[in-house]
Length: 354
Ligand code: PEP
Ligand code: MN
Image (cartoon, rainbow, N blue to C red; front, side, top):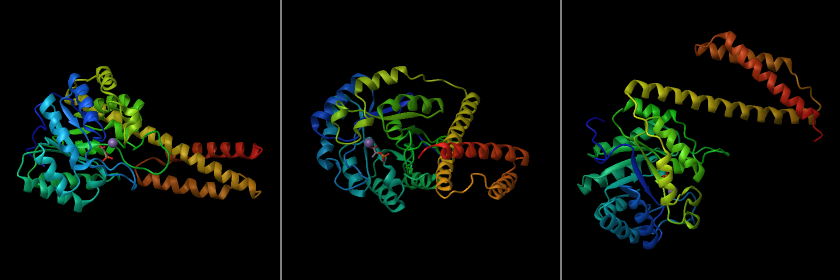
């Protein structure tokens, strides 16, 4: 993907804001006026909403397109919406959409991506396109989706990092796995990457810190959900902020102008922070399983310490680590410490009354 062009001639960071979904003309206009008054230049709103389960609010459909056109006419903001089919692309372009984005459920599907890419080529319009990462943490699939759009002739192309679905409860709605967009940046340094802190965090309080983190890591912009009355939103209400709160958030964010070398260093340090974070989460998960084993041993009157099992674990982990260029001594230290803590946690279980 060479000869890429800026999505719009705007200063970095590029800020895209607007409601998760267009719900009524009034809600769209009120939100848009609030955002335009605060200097936002690109307005987003979902017209067709992919929902995980049937029965949710699936968007107002084509009826909402003229509302976005009105936003453009009355506020001068550029307008953006999500597309997933040929029909979406053609009617969105017809309505004067300046920017199309492709959602995470669509970018995971090569057939749908190709249909969207073909429709963009068919329209013959020079439209800007942002491709969200697929729901699953698959960088190649994300790149493949971007390439399909690139091959359709789009040069004002970028990526949106919105985090990845994971089973179980997490701090984030979609776990960020920052190393994936960082690797995308390494491979395609000219491809703009926009962060979507609203869908990563899933809660209002996380939007600010995630936005700061993304900019510190050298992302080119942010796409943030904003609604004039978030508590009454028909979709994603807990992560939307009012235009006023968004203005406050953007005012508090520090945009660091870094030179190439310090930016790289900051990127790498952030990656280390992320990995340490993952390590701690994984260790906690391991301890949880250990406690379950402790409970089982207690119920079955088995002793905590099973020397042979410990021995097998230790030697297999040491070997595995050595194959990955880590010293045997280091692996032994790490795994004996982990084992020691597991035993301590199981003793706690044995000593508890239940
Ligand atoms: C959205 O941007 O409102 C949306 C549906 O996001 P995603 O595709 O990231 O889930
Ligand atoms: Mn949303």
